[in-house]
Image 1: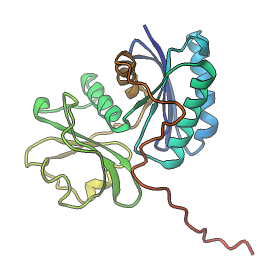
Image 2: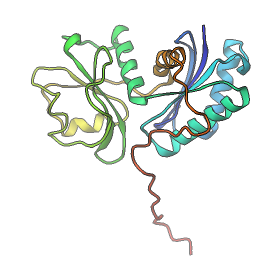
Image 3: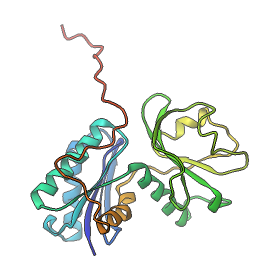
Length: 236
């Protein structure tokens, strides 16, 4: 009955979930650019709502990315702070795998329909600016069918997986823009967005397997280096 705080801040959605035995007890999330302020507020609200103390936590889980450099650092810093203060393990969950979990849960809940679910493929995408996305392909049993990559999407992208009449589901913060260039036949868009609830079961599995991170040295999976650009506005 492990109690785990799950944090996903790698996109413009700041999401925090409290999970018990791998299932979300409660979730707080909101889109915007104020993750540094919201993440602690959301966590406090979840503890109060569940009537538990942070000292009852067995671990803290964070979405490891890929995603926004700043967002990932905010979530990771908050998670590390809690782990140090409470002397509990840090868990890291692949953010794209967590997105695929949410898609599977939404399908079971009847939020979308698949003609041949067993043959379908899932492609969670996180926006990486312009026509680039962080993406990975899974089958519906959540087995990986490709490596995670930063993909500049063209008409030929994912050609190994997209077939006429098939069901190649694209979703996540970077998916909608890809519909402009991907083949219409065989590609289906579903409205599934990043959420900490997707981390819950995966985090529990990692804790059970003893797959914890070195809190001091853990770094998110940025995939791309942070690039500082000069502002256009002249100060003088």
